[in-house]
Image (tube, rainbow, N blue to C red; front, side, top):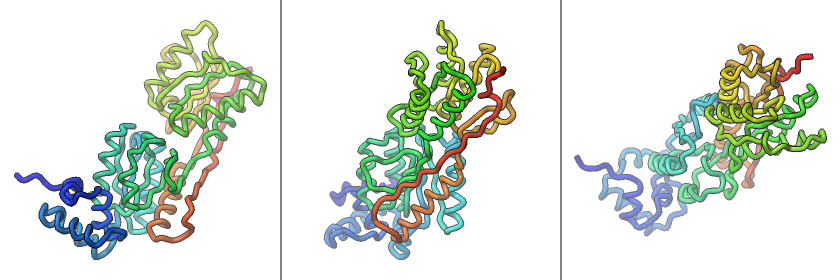
Length: 337
């Protein structure tokens, strides 16, 4: 069976970039006539998705958008996707959703596939905020909106949460409840959510004259396993914290599992607050105090920004939307008196 030609095969044959091929395929303009003729000739010789190309050239759109997130199983991202999906379908667009598992190479492969599919726009939570892996894709001029993590070297619209603000409120609340030795399970410091939530933690301590204790600063990776392991490490220390702030929902689940195994009782032996609500938070005993975000709203705003760019409306300057979170106080952060 003959191997199906890809956009990379066409690019190699025409001696151009895959982004330039995508511009021709999607009738986006900006390609010299002689270069476009060379690309069309390569497309014909390789029998590269002729029907899709014909449709794209007539309509100048495919009515599909790409959505890339690190982990589709994380309730935060599943709710963001739900918000994108509802808004997109209402506007007549259909999302193609893919999870990278924080794998940069996989993200590059997904981006190449999206170029081949001729998507009209992209919503992305990238695996690497400072990487150059988007260079080829950005040459295609397909509109991009970044969610939760900015793309720092590109002028694209960004939809973020008040990460520092939310962490500051949660840790300040723990301090108001009488906790002083507060540990943090922080996320990766090369991500905006991980770094900003840690800064919020530090700011709350400093505002209350409490020094940051290095032994209470624990590095996690936003996955359950790291929350579990870091609570085990905290419990093994000679001086234990009297409260823990977990920087995301998955690490909170791991942390709580470890506390139960250790019989380290939340609400009696230790206080607890986490970033992002989780489905079981209100059913646990005690119920968990969390920083809550309107996740579906974030997704809806991201699509609104993307639709605006796809329709070439509005200002050319990049826009940034920051959603303020809210602190939901439950029993886990209350010191028993």
